Amino acid sequence: MPFETNQTFFLDAVRAFAILMMLQGHFIDSLLNPIYRDTSNTIYNIWAYFRGITAPTFFTITGLVFVFLLLKAKEKGAEQERIKKGINRGLLLIVLGYALRFSFISLMYGKVNMNFLQVDVLQCIGLSLLLLIFLFKISFKNEWVLATLFLIIGFSIFVSEPLYRTLKIENAPILFTNYLSLQNGSVFTIIPWFGYVAFGGFIAVLFSKFGHKNNYKPIKIVAFLTIGVFMIFYSTATLKLLDNLFDLPLFTRSANYNYLFSRLGNVLVIFGLFYAFETYLKQAIITKIGQKTLSIYVIHFMIIYGSFTGISLKHFFYKSLNPTQAILGAIVFMIVVCFISFYYVQTNTFLYNKMRKLYLKLKN
Image 1 (cartoon, rainbow, N blue to C red):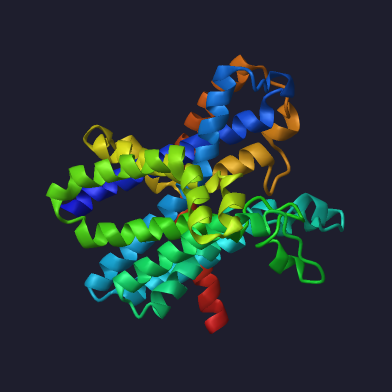
Image 2: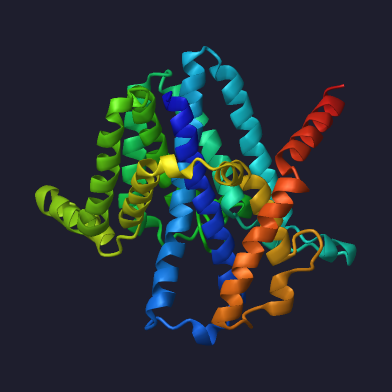
C-alpha cells in the first residue's frame, strides 16, 4: 500500500488518541473531587501520568503533520498554496483561542475580563504553524537544512528550560508576555511547547525522505520504540554526562527537572506502537476523530468551560464528582462531543467560510 495511505491512518490514529485523552483529562480534572486525588493510589497515578503525555503528543503530531504535508506539496510544486493555508490556519487558531476565553456575558454588563488574553493551546499551535513556515522559508526549502534547524531549536528549547521556567517579563505588553511567561495565567507558552513541534517537524523530514520505502517500516518502528525508551529512562543520565564532558552546568540543571525529554520519549513510544498496529486502526471512526480535532476541541471547551454562553459543566459540577461518576461521565462526554462534531457541527468549514466572506468584504 502506498506510504501516503499508510501514513494517513497512522497520523489520524495518533491524533484521535491525543484528542480523546484531552477530552477525558479535562473532564476528570475539572470535575473530580479533590479528596480523590490520592497520589498513593496506583490508578490515579497511572491516569495522571498518561494525562501528562497528551499535550506533548498533540504538539509533536502537529509539527509532524504540518511539515510532512508541506514537504509533500513542495514535491508537487504546490508549496505556496500549502503555505497560504498554513498561515490562514495559524491565524484562525490564534483568533479562535482568544474568542473561546472571551466572556460575552461580562461584556453585556459593561466589563471586559482580561483573562481572555491568556494563551492556551490554540494560540500556541497557531503561532507554531507560523514559525514552521518561517523556518521553511529561511532554510531555502532545503530539507536537510530544515531538519537541522528543527533539531537544534528543539534541543535548545528543552535544555534551556531552567532559564525560563519562572520567567517574568516586566514593562512589556501583556499580549506579548503571555506567549513567553506563565506569570499572567497562560496555560501553554511558545517555550517549551514549540520544542515538541520542532521535533515533530524533524521526524516529518525523515518520513518525507524515507517514508515511501515500505521496507523501512520495521526500522522506523524499532527506532521510535528504542529512542523513546532511551529518552524515558536514560535522558537524565545523558544530560548529566554532557555536563561532565563539556562542563556546562545547564545540562545538569535540565536533568534535575527532566520532564521535556522524558515526555518526548513517551510520545515516540506512542508513535511506534500506533505505527506498528496501524493495520488494526484502519477504522472509519478513528479516522473521523483524527480529522475533527478542531471541532472536537471547540465543542468540548464550550461544554466544560462555558465559552460564549457562560453555561458549563464546570459551573454546575466543579470538583464535585466521585471516581465512578467522573469515569462514567468522561466516557459519556467523549461520545457526546464526538457525536456533535460528526453530525451537527462543522467548525472548520464554518469558520473558514466566515473568514473568507469577511476577507472579501474588506477587499472590496
